[in-house]
Amino acid sequence: MCHSESKQSSNIGILILSGGQGRRMGGQDKGWIEYQGLPMIQKLLQTLDKQSTQLKLSAQIVISANRNIAAYQQLGHLVLADDRNGFQGPLAGIETALSHPGLTDIERWIICPVDSPELPTDYLQIMSNLDPNQIAFLQDAQRSHFAHLSLPATKAKSLSKYLNSGKRSIKGYLSSCEDVTAVESSISGFSLRNCNTEQEIKPRFNNTCPARVKTLFSI
Image (cartoon, rainbow, N blue to C red; front, side):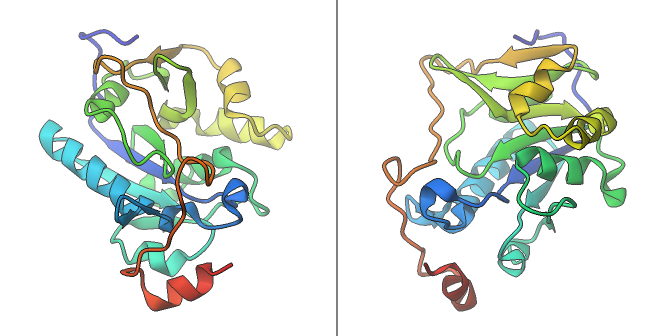
């Protein structure tokens, strides 16, 4: 766990991972699947905005997406498609953000998958309150969530090297790094909910989505 005396990076980026193929959701773009009355991407943005405001944290939000780019752009944030072709996994989206020439001022990236619309209320606090070179992943009472990462921007080269070797696993990448720690929410008994399958959430498109998006997403 991180300690209270840890330093917080002054320039933080938040990368929302929404660039997958949604195989366990029948190929649907998870960001636009409805969750509690809103597309998951909008639900997550609300959560992150609320926590950023409470912490007085000025962070740039970037969305990693490989489909329906125009729809994501309407949300008002920078949208990046993977530099690597062929849906090569979440690390490819992270690599694109870390190496983007317009984001070189970001010192630390907090990575959050779009299919986790409910976060602990201290999520941004624990993911940003780290030493400069420290890498962290989220852990709850049930298991480790390796896709929820806090990563120094200086890891761009090591991440590209790992991907160039043909490997794609986040856990595998972390095992190749030093100074990796698990961070836990202070919320007692909190268990992160991942909406990965139709059993975990009943997919239904939000009627407020742009009409062209609904057409693009139909299956």
